[in-house]
Amino acid sequence: MFSKACQYGLKASIYIATISYDGKRVSLKEIAKEIDSPEAFTAKILQDLVRHNIIKSVKGAYGGFEIPKNEISTIKLSQIVNAIDGDNIYRGCGLGLHVCDEEHPCPVHDQFKAVRTQLKNMLENTNLEQLALDIKSGVSFLKL
Amino acid sequence: MFSKACQYGLKASIYIATISYDGKRVSLKEIAKEIDSPEAFTAKILQDLVRHNIIKSVKGAYGGFEIPKNEISTIKLSQIVNAIDGDNIYRGCGLGLHVCDEEHPCPVHDQFKAVRTQLKNMLENTNLEQLALDIKSGVSFLKL
DNA sequence: GTTAATTCGGATAAAATTATCCTATTTATA
DNA sequence: TATAAATAGGATAATTTTATCCGAATTAAC
Image 1 (cartoon, rainbow over the protein chains, first blue to last red):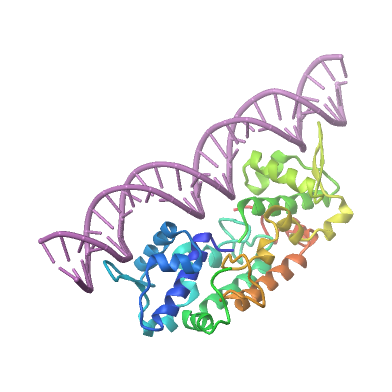
Image 2 (cartoon, helix red, strand yellow; image 1 turned 90 degrees about the vertical axis):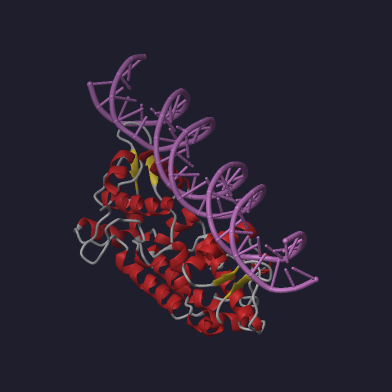
C-alpha cells in the first residue's frame, strides 16, 4: 500500500511524537533502533519530513528531532503519506490509467472510489497524538 | 496500491474477457495494444496468469489467450491480484511490521483493518463479467 | 513438409526504490 | 577554542521492479 520509505516515515513520526510528548528530543540513532529501520535511509526520510515542516530538527550536540508539543495532535497521517509517497494513492487510478474520472472511468473506478475515500478519511482523521498515546501506554507497538 | 504488473494483469484479464465473451481468442499483440502496455512484459504476466489457471493460452498460429466463457463470471479480481502481487495487501501490516495482530497491533492496526477489509470485499465481489460488459457497452475504458 | 503466426522461457538491460558511506556543517559543553 | 555529538547532503551501491531481446517450441494453413 505504502512504500517502505513511507512506512519508516510514519513509524519515525509516531516515535518522535511519543518522545516529544514528554518535552524531549530524540536522535536519529535512537529512532532507527526503536522502529527497526536502516539508519542512513531513515535520515533521508526525516530530512524530507523536516523540509515539509512536519517535524523539526536541531543540529549539533544534544540535537535531534522533535515535534512541538502543541502540534502533535494537529499532524495527520495524510500529511506524512503525502510528503513521502505523494497523492497518487488518493488521486490515482487503481489500474494506472492516466485519465480516469466520472466521464471516462476505468472498469473498476466506482469500486475503487469507495476504498480510496475510506483510506483518505482514515488518514485525514488520524493524528500523531492518538497513536503516540497508545505506544506510551503499551497498547500498540512500533517493532516486531 | 497495486504493482504495475498487477495493473497490467487486471486490464489484460478484463480485455481477454470481453473478447472471450464473443467466443473469440486474442493475441498478446492485440492485448498489449488495447490496454496500452509493453508487449514483452505483458507476456510474462500472462504466462503467470496461465500458470495460475486464471486464463488459458493456445500456442501456435491462430493461438492466443482466452477465458472459457462459462468461467468469465467466476473469476474474481482477488484471484488476479493474489496471483501477481501475493496476499500482502490483505494480510500485511500497513506499517510493514513482521508481527502485527490483535495481540500485538501496530499503531494503525485498527484503522487499517477497516480499509483492508473493504478492499478485500471489493476484490472478492467483483468478477470479470461485470467489468467486461461495461467495456463492451462503452461505459468504461481500458486506456487513456 | 514448409511456412508463418503464435506462446514459452531464459538471459539481459533499464529504471526505480532501498540502502550505505563519507564529508561538511552545526552546536553544546568542557 | 577544542572536542564531541549531531544533522545535512552528495555520491555511490545493492536490490527490486519494470522492460526488452531472442531463440525454442507449437500449431494451423497452404
